[in-house]
Image (cartoon, rainbow, N blue to C red; front, side, top):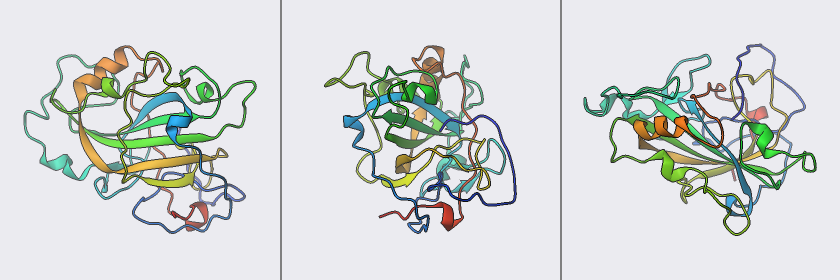
Length: 246
C-alpha cells in the first residue's frame, strides 16, 4: 500500500507501531502500540484502489516465495498449475508489470475523512482531516487469460455515493478474512525503516482467479490514475514489529 522505492538496512526501527505485511497464519506479535480498529468499510469512504505485483502478505493460498527485492513477495500456490489457455498472452496490454500467471494483491483503501476517491495516499487525507482512521480490505488474485474469471471492473468504485459514502461495487474479502493492526506498505519501507501510519487490515486468506483482460481495461481508465502493478514491502517477521492477531 503506497510506496515506490526500495531500501535495505540492518537495524530494526524503534518506537513505531505495528507494521505490515505479515504472515496471516501466525497470530503472534509483541508490538506494544495499540489503537482502535477502524470501523467497517461500509462506514468509511473508499479513497483508493491499487495493486501490487505478487502478494505482500503470506497466507495459506499464497505461500510460494517470489524472491526478494521490489517485486518479491509471494505467489499463489496454484501458479504452477495453470492451463496453456489461461497463460495465453493478451492481445493488448495496458497495465505495466503484469502477465498471465502473475499474482497480484489488491488493496481497497478506506478512510474516515470526507474525500473524493483519487490518486495515492493523499486522496485518503484532507486539510481538515490529517489523521484519519484507515482500513485496507485485501484480496490476492492469480491473473489468467479467461474472461469467465473475476472481472476487476465489477470491484471498482461506484459512480456515485452509497448512503452518503464512496464505496466499491463489491468487496470480495468475505467472512474468513484476517483482521489486524498494522501500517502502510510498499517497497520504501523495511524492518529498518518503518511506516508511521496506523492502518486496520482485513486480508482474505484465499487466492482467486482474475481475468487479466479486465485489469488492462481498468488500467486504461480508472479514477485512481493507476497504470501499473506496484512493488512490495518484504514480509515483516520481527515479532516486535507485529501486532497480536486477536
